[in-house]
Picture (cartoon, rainbow, N blue to C red):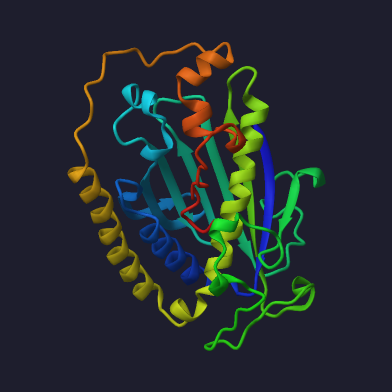
Length: 306
C-alpha cells in the first residue's frame, strides 16, 4: 500500500469551501456524464459518526465502459463502474473506491480542511506524515493535462466580480488573505505481485491531476456559488443529481444490445503480465498511457471535497 499526503491551498475560507465543493462536484459530474458514462448517484442521505458527528453519506457509481478494450467486454459487466462511498463530516471527509471484480484494488482518501497555508504537519492528529510523502500542489502554477486546460479556469487570469479576488500571482500562498488548505491523506493499494508499485504510482499520478483540476474549478467558479446558503446548494445538488442520473441511464437504455457473453469464473490467480492483461487491468483500469493506442482520460474519482 502506497500512502501520500497532498496539500492544496485555495484563496477561500473553510466555510466558503463547504458551499464551493458541493457546487463544483455536482456541476463537474453532470458535465462529464453522457454516452453511457459518468457519475450515477445511488444514495445521498444523512449519516452520523461517533467521533465526527452528523454528516452526509453518498454512494456513487462512476461508469467507465469505454475504457475497456473490446475483448474484455466479454468478461465484465456491460457498463463497467467504480463504486465510490463518501462520508462528509465537514470539515473532515472520508472517500473510498472499489471495483467489484478487482478485489485487490482499493483507494481511501481522508481529507481535512483548515484555514492556513498548509503548515500543519499533523493535521489528522495521529502520526505525522513523513516529509518525503508530503506533496504541495499549487493550483496556480502546477501543470495539468492539456485537454483539461480552460482559459476561464486559468487562475493567473481569473478575476472574481463578487469577491474582488484574483488573479493569483507567484508566491500567493505566502501572503494571500483569505487562505485555506485541503489536506488529503491518500492510500491506494493494488496487491498484485510484480505490478503493485508501478500501478500504485500510476494511480497517484492520476489523483494528482484530478486534485489540481477540481480545486482550480472550485476557485474559478466562485461567482456561480458564492453567497448560496447550504440549503440552496443542496437543492442545486439534488437537481444536478437527477439530471446526471438521467443522462447516464438514458444512454445505457438506448445503447446497442450487449453481445452474448460466455460463462466464466471471476476468481483468477494472477502470476504474470499475461494473466493480468487477461483481467483487463493494464488497459481497462490502470494502464500506463504510453502503452495504449487510445489516450485514456483521467478519471475524476474524488467527488466529495477532493
